[in-house]
Length: 158
Image 1: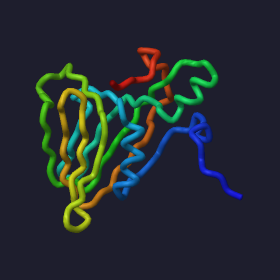
Image 2: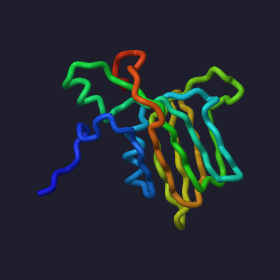
Image 3: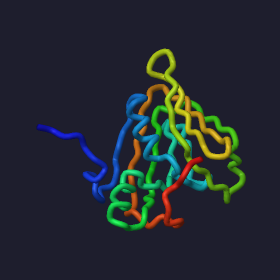
């Protein structure tokens, strides 16, 4: 008999996930919720049709374990890459303000006519990044060991 995977099953293993459809992207969206990043850690490599972010991701998958064991919550640096990007647009993001810190609220995919569509990153403070893609292909990969969340608390939303 097989069982569904639980958050605890992940242990300390770094995440390395991919999304090829809207349902997959919802999983990644839940994992990058409340991730923070400086505006300087955002890149669109037009020649390679890639958009990448270096995020300081809250480890939502570890929160139940941390609470159960009475230890502090953690963050980890992760790279979020969107492939097949044809255009990038943003609102509420001033790239000239090098000290600006952005926070991800969610990611969603708005499908087009064929495999194309728009990946929307909704940011705190009414910001957004819209990526026009030929086909949905997103990866999220942890690239450092987890570290204690500076606030010592899990993010909350009203």
